[in-house]
Amino acid sequence: MSPESIQQQHMSYLGDFLKLQQAEAIYRRSGVRSQEVEQHLHALKCNLLENLHASHEQAVQPVLEALADEQLEILQNKQHMIEFMAFFGHQFCRTKPFRDVVIRSLVRRNAMEIGVADAVTHAWWFMSYMFGMSFGHSLYLSRHEDKHALLINDTSVPFITSDHPIVNVHPCVSETTFIAPEHADLYYPISPRIAYIICNSGRFISGRNTIDEATVVELNTKLASQAMVHIVGNSESAILPFQSLIGRRAQKAQKQREGKGFN
Image (cartoon, rainbow, N blue to C red; front, side, top):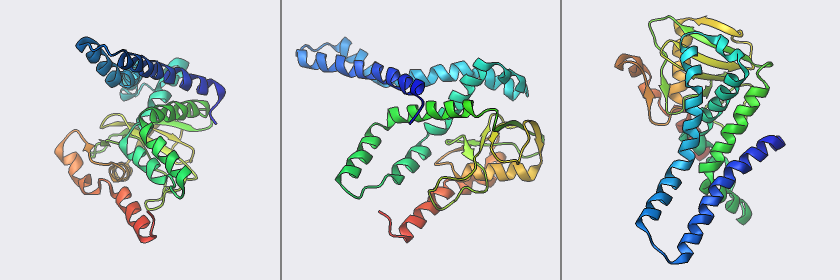
């Protein structure tokens, strides 16, 4: 259901992986064994996808550094905005919490649905990349309708981050039920002082927003509750108040599913 240009891009990237698989299959059938070839195949299988993500991270580094320095104007450059939105999409879609939520939501009522769910699970390593690119593309296209803002935190409570660094902090997000939220306020802390948010609600205005301590605590709480294992701060005192919240949303959702008798 993605635009044709994005579908073509997905298939182009997938083609690189299929060529590697085909080359390995030819090598296995040949009966020849070479330690050097084995090492190259192993390195390619380990690094091909990681190299793609590394290229996105390298391209967006100047943007992140500028945003951390409150230079929001850098995103007026179209290429910088494209690179940032692609990175933003991957930061949301490549995490284990996102993967687990999606896979848990797949129904397994009959043989066909079980087959599809198993295929999604086995192919997640590439599907997550597709989701990230599609999500980033959508965010780029809607950039004039959504509000893009810097949140500036000059309080005594620093921003924290986590193993799921972008979360939807809109109040409509359910803590117990996996349903599509009506609104998205996508919050991404960049440094202990600066965060970026993409809103389709009216909570923040486009541009720079200086926020108070209560808002910082609220955002840290929501980020920690959607983390899976780790939260990260610039000091022990920054993370201790939120440590007990790690994974709270997933735990509540699990209890809700068990209460309703879901498999």
